Amino acid sequence: MPEIAFRGVHHAYDDRTVLSDVDLTLTEHRIGIVGANGGGKSTLARMINGLVVPTSGTVTVDGVDTKRHGRQVRRTVGFVFTDPDHQIIMPTVAEDVAFSLRRSRLSKTEREARVRDVLDRFGLAGHADHPPHLLSGGQKQMLALAAVMVAEPRILVADEPTTLLDLRNTRTIARTFAQLPQQLVVVTHHLDLLDDFDRVLVVDGGRVVADGAPRPTIEFYRESVS
Ligand SMILES: Nc1ncnc2c1ncn2[C@@H]1O[C@H](COP(=O)(O)OP(=O)(O)OP(=O)(O)O)[C@@H](O)[C@H]1O
Ligand SMILES: [Mg+2]
Image (tube, rainbow, N blue to C red; front, side, top):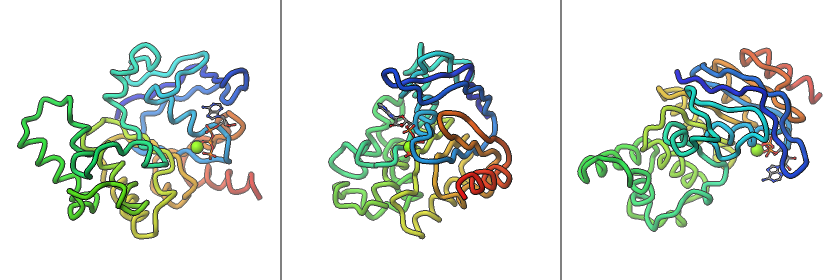
């Protein structure tokens, strides 16, 4: 797996500190991040592909600094937002997915095949020519994920990918995640999603307050709120 490294990371928006003393080396296959609202999870997740760069300290992905080489890092790290409307931009579902391949060296035929394949995997094959705004909230979420995965990033970071989903689509996402060969970092309030993950971080008040196997860390989190 790739290595995501946080070294002495501190982050403030304006002068308000939202992350402190974050030192992490993430090499596991599937990593979950949980914790209370406003704790700093999204900020931490966004640092992995350089959407947010630390006020001090460094974040690197396989040694590549997110601050100095953001574009290169973003080719390695795909990011899925909570709200799919933030990332759906093209007039049809298939075009939206194809847009992610605009800079690839694939032929037109290869691109079309990749788009078809990913739409099929994410349950959107019947919607290829539909305008995305006609999709349901959950289908849009699947489209946002498909549009990131079609570019085959080595790492996928997803910030609350199941928040808008019904039970069936939540299961589809869980199954999809379980089968992904890529390294995966998921921020979620759906604790069940993390049962078979390799590592879970609990983030609270801008710090990593627990870190380890899913069972003890989730237990720690449950107890901290009871
Ligand atoms: N762009 C921003 N500008 C200023 N403050 C921000 C910005 N983004 C987040 N914050 C603040 O940083 C803190 C941490 O926010 P963050 O979104 O990382 O938390 P979170 O753990 O993801 O919370 P939630 O579970 O509600 O999504 C919050 O106090 C939030 O108000
Ligand atoms: Mg968040």
